[in-house]
Image 1 (spheres, rainbow, N blue to C red):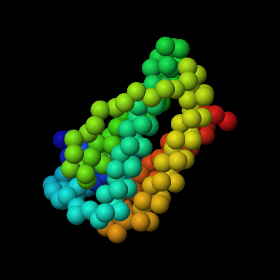
Image 2: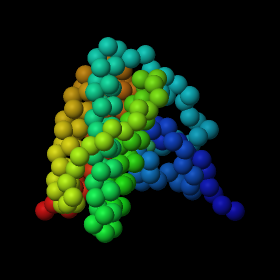
Image 3: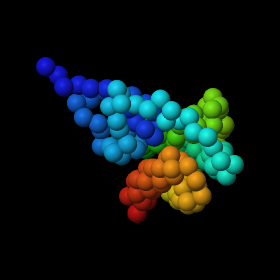
Image 4: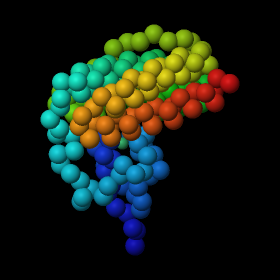
Length: 178
Ligand SMILES: [Fe+2]
Ligand SMILES: [Fe+2]
């Protein structure tokens, strides 16, 4: 008999079916330690009383995530046009992850996920990986600050997880630009 179970990711809230929790969340990229079995899910995970500073920082994070998701969407389309299958896969995966981050932030803010606005990008995937590196670097610096400023333990944890995830993205771009 299959040992399949239902898990949930505490960073994005999405459910996952598997024998075990994945090494990285397929939706938001959070590492395995953030998974819980769905039966143990805390329904108030995204229902946190937000301090003024955290509210402001979540709004800034939302804008960053939406901009980066739209940038990766552009980069994905350019890679597709250039028959760059690797670039298409990478930028598509990153676009989905950043949109998922925007969605998780929207849950904390109790708003619906805003539409992506158009962003410009290069026709060249290597140039887009370079810009991706700079975008991830800016996000990591912002989220480290937001993590340190958060009074709420749950938001400290959330911003800390984003720092980890965006650092994985940074490393990925580094490999593709060196
Ligand atoms: Fe997740
Ligand atoms: Fe992100």
